[in-house]
Length: 403
Image 1: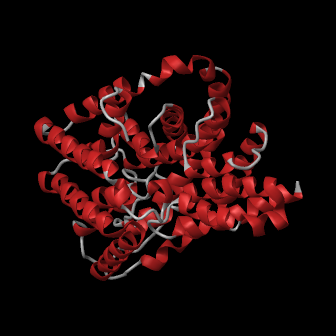
Image 2: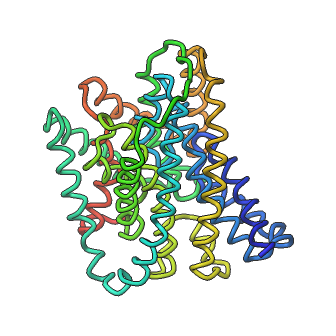
């Protein structure tokens, strides 16, 4: 037990570090931890290392809410949620945005535990019938999203354009430097579509005074949004080929990020963490590794399923409290020159993307940024840009294309 708790604390620290650095994926930190495994296992053993990896994965999901909110830089799981969160920060409500996302995340873990047990016990028995549903489900969801746009034609064109870019990037992802694990190709894609394009179109006015008064949602609304996010997390955590980025599109079909910002943030936070919890069940139930952390754990001696769930719950509580504490420092951004801040973040993002993904990654970043700016010019939502992920998955699940 001491070794497991030690591993949990080490993972929490690693998750805080990776979560607070914009653009760094949890798979990157997992790779570093695995590289240091001979040293770590000397102190905490193999079981402690597994606990550390799980703790890092869940705490990263909480802490990356902060750079997404204040800098507008998305991780692979915060593609759409960065938009309402950053918008609230520009209104002086950044701490509120972080707290809403964090409370959704902790509910995602709490609700995700019984949901993952259901998936582990029930869905494993009907898995062959489930696999073929991915394509039709995504076609239905994206169709509903597109027809809700003010211009269906432009919404469809943006969806197809971003989808073709995604197909191109995945097809030639071997040209990208692999310094960020399996998420390397997603970094320039999502950063351009939902990060850099947001920063380039943001106001250059000084950041308003950051003040927290309340969450802006009652308990019932939070629970409803968390439940919706958990169901989305179940879908993307269990169905093959989907990711947390896909969950944001699923949620937007029911809760619009541009009109129900607070509700969306809670739901997106719940989906991100429920996806992680259900991914554990998928690993044990159908032997599918949904992220780089689970790939590494598969090479070790996995702990019992129930023990991993307990570690995840404990890590989520610790990460939640840490996130709330760090969110109180939002006042540091009050009065900061918006133009200088945006310029600094843009330069940092471009430089980081160049280091992690190389020249081809910068090319993808430029293309993605160009597509990401189109919705702003036409006054449309950016959700159709999720075609970058959903179109390849749809074609793959229907047997028309292979990664």
